Amino acid sequence: LLLKVMEELTGAQLIAESLKTQKVEYMFGIVGVPVIEVAMAAQAAGIKYVGMRNEQAACYAASAIGYLTGRPGACLVVSGPGLIHALGGMANANMNCWPVIVIGGSSDQNQETAGAFRRFPQVEACRLYSKFSARPSSLEVIPSVVEKAVRTSMYGRPGACYVDIAGDMVNAKVDRSKIRVVSCCPDPPVSLANHGAVADAISVLKMAERPLVIIGKGAAYSRAETALREFVELSGLPFLPTPMGKGVLPDDHPNCVAAARSRALLQADVILLLGARLNWILHFGLPPRFDPNVKIIQVDLCAEEIGNNVRPAVALLGDINAVMAQLLQGIRNDGWKYGSETAWWSSLRNKMAANAKISKSLALQSAVPLNYYTVFHHVSQLLPHDCIIVSEGANTMDIGRTMLYNYLPRHRLDAGTFGTMGVGLGFAIAAATLEKNKGDKGRRIVCVEGDSAFGFSGMEVETMCRYNLPVVIIVVNNNGIYSGVDPETWKEMAKMGNLTLIAPPVTLLPEARYDEVMAAFGGKGYLVRTVEELRRALELSLTDWQRPSLLNVLIDPSSDRKQQGFFIKKKEI
Ligand code: ADP
Ligand code: MG
Image (cartoon, rainbow, N blue to C red; front, side, top):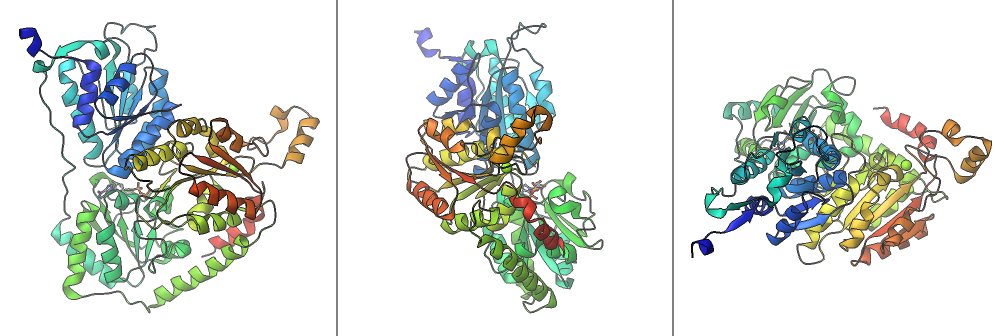
């Protein structure tokens, strides 16, 4: 009788149940010894498990779940090389301030000696790439270690956390009565900025002649879109999104000055910085790209971030969404609004009109091979407004960012703070998995990839085909990294001698058939050379909800080089 009341749990079950209790709903990974049982237990606990082809991509996917939902996804990996491959994803998540939980199997507790199979100091290895890294010392403490990891990944500045599971713990058993129940940790507590600092910020804004709001991915993560829209519309201030701040307010909003980015950054005298670091993406907030006397009002929840590179005129330490409400109240009280007919606004508008003209003339060319601008022009015309755009590559990401509009928050995922290439397919799989689990058709996930960027995680097209994720991948193929050569030149080179000595290191195989990679697994592949083929293939892909598609868009391998004059011109402020 006593035996019946006792319920035995395995380590695998404990991990799975603990994750589920902490509302971790998705797991991406690659199984092997010793974590197969963990993946199975996760499914039994109701966690959706997506088997990937490389741990790096699995970790990218899990971290995108964290950014998109505010609750971390889990990444499950085997010991040694499995965990090492996941480090790239952890580093990327940590740099982006996205929550993610990595669960790594490791060698048995009694095999800490040298030479054990796939033995590696995993907890130590993860420390550089995470906020928290630990190995539960017994089955009994697994629920509290998992809770601590999930909580730490979300609270304060979000980031990666690692939990190491000894191989022999996976199948070891413990009686449920011995386990202390650890309940779900609540969403992060929200903090307001200091009242006096809010008043200072308002008066600095009011005195500004050339004010600018910068919207970063912290604003996207904090779900500040509603308060922010009201603030921008009430205050009449121009705003500029960072790459992943795009869509918090729509790119076609009348106050968006993205098309005059360089001038806006250089000439602003007061900048309200919302959830964006003054790192390389924002040219460090320093001359020559910024006015040396610019007054920054810095809003961030991470105190250590305040003052990096530029000492702010006002520091608003708090949650952006909450701080926006404070700022709104401040300007509502006296009905202040920045004029729409100021010299600053007309300078920005003139610049935007001039820049639009240049890219339009390039976009309307239709000569074959196509150029970047023409491709993005037609793609942007056909994409649904609510699609999630994933983008990576060099020119593909840079030019695509200016031409592919975002209309909704958290609808753009790209190489991010770390500039990581290879993130795209993992991100797309995460987004598509979320959409699929909503039941209806959901939003379109469109992956706009450079050919080099695609290669890093290209085998994940098999994952997309396996789970019938209707992702649309557009490979903008210029035969190389930055740029490649055309097929004839390549043939000449091959005839001339040893390719490993003479082929430019940036080259990839000209006109490689990435579309056939997709077709190999049952997805739909299209080879595209002309505007008509591009439009037709994209239209067909966007109506297919059964399987993924890949458009292999062959463009002029010297497309970017030809336009260098344009880039120089564009840089003239
Ligand atoms: P971007 O790449 O868009 O420039 P960054 O990743 O550099 O953005 O900066 C995002 C900033 O937002 C980080 O400094 C992070 O601490 C901050 N942040 C994240 N979530 C919040 C939040 N809820 N409230 C305030 N700041 C946040
Ligand atoms: Mg390329």
